Length: 435
Image (tube, rainbow, N blue to C red):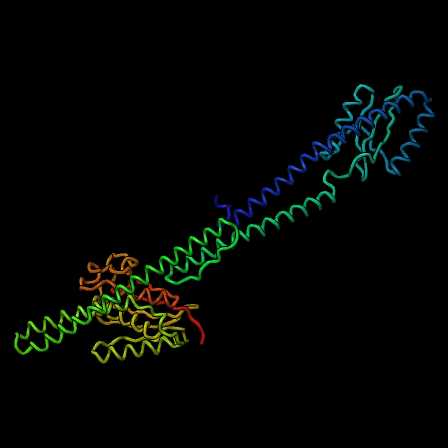
């Protein structure tokens, strides 16, 4: 199975080529059985009749006349070549000549005739007649085709095989092209993108596959819009009672105990942060106009804002080339990673940028406990919280899901990995485009 191509196109092409080859071999066998072997049989019968008649004629001649006749006969038949007689072992013959010699020997066995072969160019059968104790050699060349597969047959077979292979290749490519489009669209959909609708043309089977994928694509897009609309509406509606609660706490702050007011303020702030996460998750970053900018500039601005709030970052810049991005969305993703590092990890927190091949990346590295044995892919799922691995701080479980979604909408990816030492590395990779 390892010798088989991995792709359906390769396997189908190999199968077609094998079928064509088997067809050519079958045609050659049929031609040998139905055309060549009957022709050999007819030639052997004719040569045997002529040899018997020739033997009878030589018996009627005197010894001197026999010698003169044989000399003139061989000189005309051999055109200057000599007959290699003798009692040595005969040289091996090709399949065609061997088959003819066997058939001719079977028919001449009872007439005192022995069949040998002239091995020079253009050679043929040589008959040895024993008459009155004397051996006479008679050559009968030029009665067989020189090759079993002539050049014309080979060219015709090769041309027919190439034409059949070219036709099969064209048909297979026409069938494979819609499958390739479906695979590419499915990969785009799996990365969080929105593939273009597939063309519903071609054979009925591939057209049905394209229609099914288009229905799946529309259904997923509709469900995503409905979920985003629900989250956005719910989050927006919650903002009003939260504002009222906050105002009420400020009004009653002087009348109640300060500890109770501070606790209420913290609870309201946490609820407001959760509502903000819902809104961020429901927001599509592609609604913001894309611009060409540098990751170094963006990270420097974010680091300055955190330093103003007493959370200094260790900055390492290495991505001066421009990338196409949605700045507000990418800033939101970077902020989520930093908040996650400060909340669940330990200082110092490092913010770095760099380039790797055709990608630019930015990463946040903390000094906390890392993944703690948890699956990185599970942590990136929406509403999945890593409290056992990341400290147990309350949250909606949307931070990393928002970051991954923004990365996918930029055509990139989010990767979580352990540090060689303590800590977690969260890297956003973006395709690099020169501005």
